[in-house]
Amino acid sequence: MAEEAKAKGNAAFSSGDYTTAIKHFTDAIALSPTNHVLYSNRSAAHASLHNYADALEDAKKTVELKPDWSKGYSRLGAAHLGLNQIQDSISAYKKGLEIDSNNEGLKSGLADAQAAASRSRAAPPPSPFGDAFSGPEMWAKLTADPSTRMYLQQPDFVKMMQEIQKNPNNLNLYLKDQRVMQALGVLLNVKFRGPNAGDDMEIPEETSTPQPSAPERKVEEEKVVEPEPMDVTEDKEAKERKAQAVKEKELGNAAYKKKEFEKAIEQYTKAMELDDEDISYLTNRAAVFLEMGKYDECIKDCDKAVERGRELRSDFKMVARALTRKGTALAKMAKCSKDYEPAIETFQKALTEHRNPDTLKRLNEAEKAKKDLEQQEYFDPKLAEEEREKGNEYFKQQKYPEAVKHYTESLRRNPKDPKAYSNRAACYTKLGAMPEGLKDAEKCIELDPTFSKGYTRKGAIQFFMKEYDKALETYQEGLKHDPQNQELLDGVRRCVEQLNKASRGDLSPEELKERQAKAMQDPEIQNILSDPVMRQVLVDFQENPKSAQEHMKNPMVMSKIQKLVHAGIVQMR
Image (cartoon, rainbow, N blue to C red; front, side):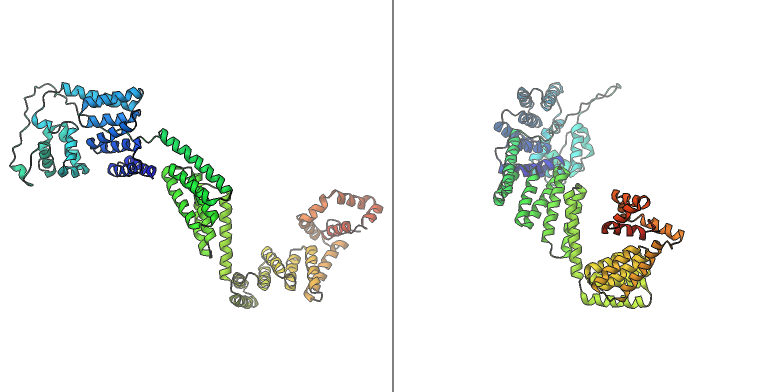
């Protein structure tokens, strides 16, 4: 695309690589031969290399294609001035100012040309030797000759020639440099026989006149013509292309909503061809490919959007969007846990660009999917059984931390084994890690509601935590599945004994205070006490025994009163 080649040329020009810039502008011209901006930019690049003849040719083409564009005359004036065609340069700058009288670049160029004309009229007749190095014409000759053109790419040579141009007497300092001798031969139209030919050539010395004791005469330096900065502002045609690109994008959006994916791709592609400085066309096309299941094409568009976006310094949100779509495509292509790693990495990169809730959600989903697949890939019931048996051996030896380690590995191998959860819950109980043990016991019951061990583990932990009413409920729930289980029956008996202590008032003041404090932390007890109906019931128990008897006939009220009694909050006399 011409615009892409132009953008590359602009970038090369900005970095000082004028030869590469010329190459890219030439490629762009081949694709768009009527684009006057391309000729203007190439003219500036030629002028930067002191190729003023080529710069003049491109400047003339610019003016021919766009006679009402002031920048073309700026290029034309600079090229003429570089070739020491001062009057033509002045004329070009004046024509440009007729079109745009406020253009600072044209004003500055005209001033330079007029200054050069003044110097040309005021300067005394130069010596034949000094003329060889005077003005921009020297650079034009060196560029035109194949034997010296390559030297212009060497900074030390350019510096020497600039010093000689400022003061021809400096030539004596550089006569031993064969490149300078070669350049001198080109400038004086003298052919050398070989590397040592300079020894046989008569070089006229610069004539000098005795200077008075007064201060030395100041020599005005010849001003080197510099090309104007590259014009990268959008012209009218570029704006029209951008506007058309937006219309194509809107047509693509409409087609996407109608599920007309092929048409949407066509519209987004047209938009990209018209304007390559808006990466939303790429991200939109990537979204279509994603919807079609063409994940490789989606990823390619996203990569290109990220690269182009960083070149153009696009909004970080747009770059994040491209990365998110790439991550989504990678996640959809994943077949094993390792396949999710690049998707997760891409989502994380997107979040560094812009922390978007949708991207964060997709990252969490990818991480969960990876974890689930890892568990599936790690699943091995046989190895799980072996690890559980190792845990049992350590449990018998009262080496509970080692037992926990093996039960945990067993669960990694088979996370659906209720026995492993039950055994690990027993280990946690021995270690005093009650919350962890309770969690394992509940998971055991969840996996197998008919497994009695789960209820005995849970009830024992609750009893140890002095949550007697909850432990009683757990044991009773277990007896529904196994009515003759002695451990469950014993658990019920122990809980009833503890609860009856509160009912009979057999608790010591310390025990009562501890039980009440623990009960007040229970959300269920808090709800009962904050219920207006129950608060009235409690008042009636104290002040109106007859009404209290009526309340006791309500099973729900009776159950709540019983909980308060067991918690030591209410005492019956």
